Length: 433
Ligand SMILES: [Zn+2]
View 1 (cartoon, rainbow, N blue to C red):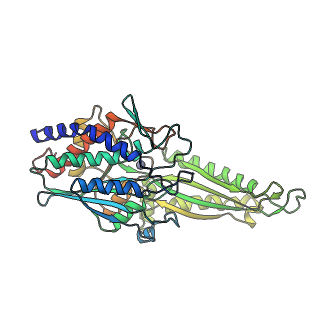
View 2 (cartoon, rainbow, N blue to C red):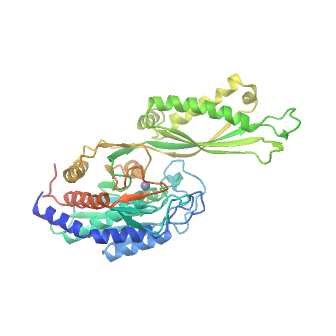
């Protein structure tokens, strides 16, 4: 580590009070995704205002990037339909250091999951024993502020740096979204030589993630009076059979890819106890591996979950071979979403510089591996076609929880990682490998 780097880290450490104050400020602004599905549903708007102003105060050139209604269609992918993008713009801020040099994007999402059932006031950040509590503390407001602090520190040590830093605060990453915010930024032409997605927890540096796809399965019955039986067929009974078939599919899927789960998240049917229900709806989240996307690309030329869709539909079609009702009334499958996975070899010069900086500062060497959950880094990788790493400073196991919190030490260390990593990316005399 050279003198400039040591001084940069000292400045980053001196900004800890600022970091804690900003993290508190941001947690106190509710930014629950409008599609959280609970009573806390809100909007990112107020958080985005705060973020834009903070970036302006740091001298950034700020622009707002709206999400077009047909954002998924433009990207040729299946995304959750009918989401509204009113008052839901991304905030993108830019700083130029010196001349030329690489461009680095630091991307984080502003929205959080809902807050129903939280163990404390989700928007009243409290610090106790070196831990900050509140919705978004780990996922991902702590990370948003890590980016801001790194930028603030870098600005004070800009001598000799050449390059551009772009901070992105995006909407709609959570709550079954498909990363529309980040996708909109990518489609708007905002690109870089290297991207860091500041999201997730400290357990690993993420160079990939699984894909996730959502089928909606409609199961038909035949309505009738509860007392008469007769020709009535109960759609709930039939839906149980479908659930069992999906469980068998899930077991095989999991055997092939041990971190690819299938979750039944929606099961709807029935109106009154006196009526035999005629229809049932099931929705699943199916996590799928990079290998499945690779197979789809080889077979159909598209990097997505097509082969998983095929397997799933074939499995359900087979129900008609042994069950007369399913033969007469096959289930209907609609694909609501397909967020592709990504994988980066991380052997490029930028990734190696960043991994090197993190490992130099880390108490324990963070493994470099794929994330089981989907995150926005997939769009940065697949659309921009640039190397991407996910670096999170949240506390493992705390995101989305009833007692969401983050350890301050992790957030402070995260700011050191990002400061040093970006400094080296922009400094041709820095510690490149
Ligand atoms: Zn997140």
